[in-house]
Image 1 (cartoon, helix red, strand yellow):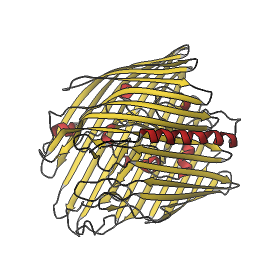
Image 2: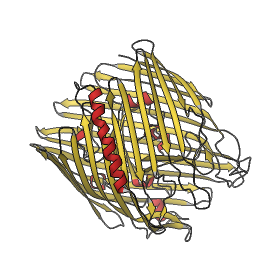
Image 3: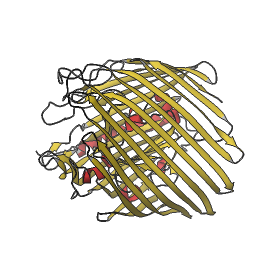
Image 4: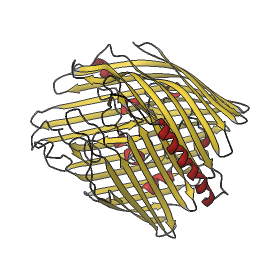
Length: 619
């Protein structure tokens, strides 16, 4: 198949949209300068407008305005993101970021890397609720030179809420369609030299029957429910000026009902559970005025269970994966430049068993060295990163990132970068008794980007042309009934993103045009859309705040034996009414137009749904 992607047309689109940003600036406030910061783009705090990689920050204010419940719902409107789900809330979900699958996107919680080492390889993001989340940062593109394996499509870092200032409490309750209910509560503050946060949350729904019986006629048409309990704990103790120690722990326990994917009978019952948890202990030390050092030890883990004993083909399984990390990071300020450097030792393990008495117990170690250099001279800024990762039983990988920015005018900045990345095979891909392949090679990727950024007051817009090629793509090979480096893949396209405040309205928008291809066949990669777009707005009107989110996803190919998944457009609306300074009533309608759509063949998504809630936050 001849591949011809319209770059000239994309450049025209970018230039036309950029021309409108000046008009937005004329109507917006020019008295408050943008001060939003980001940590993930280079492992150290910097202004968002100074980040070289295309980076998005979703703060607590954005989370509360969206009234989103889980992480996939929050990210679904962001540039480059797609989510697929086999049914309702809590059922198996997967993400694509710039066409890269979940296995190629690194997830961090407060700096703790989460990996899943069984034969699925994908972190269960569908169980990460937002009750205890302070903000989410998304860095797009190859950044393995900063974070190591898995950062091919990018990095998602979740920062949990923490305590500071006077003691405050909060609580939320919500009820809605499909027998849904949600509640959360927490307290935070500071007592002397000790800062603290503790919060808990509970989400439950009776669910709906997701299976399309015209596609899978033998499936059980019962509703599939979901229950989730989560918590977040944070403690920080100041030992002396510039020296602190801390503890962070969070967990999410999701239990779900599921369908059999067309292989069972109309009376089958399938159940599952995923328990995610992470914790870290750390110490921060301001060794000199210009040298900040952090030493941390952390663990991320996920326990997944599946129960199909009440089905035509009885089966059950359990998998436990852990990742323990010892990290020493340093940031040294040298005038206008920042030098970062450190060493990291990680131990990954997996333990699985099932009703066929099949077991897998494996572990491996990784040792990594990393360094970065970033800063600016006049109108010129740059970021350099280099990292070396050595994993037991595999050849070492060296990755690099080179980024350059040129300030064309006070509001306009030209950005370019080139980078390399790699992705280790999960232990299950290597050693699973049924599907493992010990000869599997890591995926490697190279990427180049050219971007134009406009930033003024509280508004940021960015257009990014990107091109990525991934070699040794790891897929399940039906010819050998095992995982193999089946093919190479490529993607190129344009991302547009905007966020800001015009007058009193908070606005967000994104557009993604891409061409993710399997290079061996010339066909588009499964479930990837060529175009996605979203628009969102939130407007205060006295005691009221009203908002809406419009999202479009183009048609996508699914498995080769079925037709393409149809394009769809979703409209969600939200409202909030301040009863008092501390108490507010909330409401939202998801899928207002009641569209029928699928993100995976055979599985319908939720129809129109109404949710009502009360939010209390101590001031």
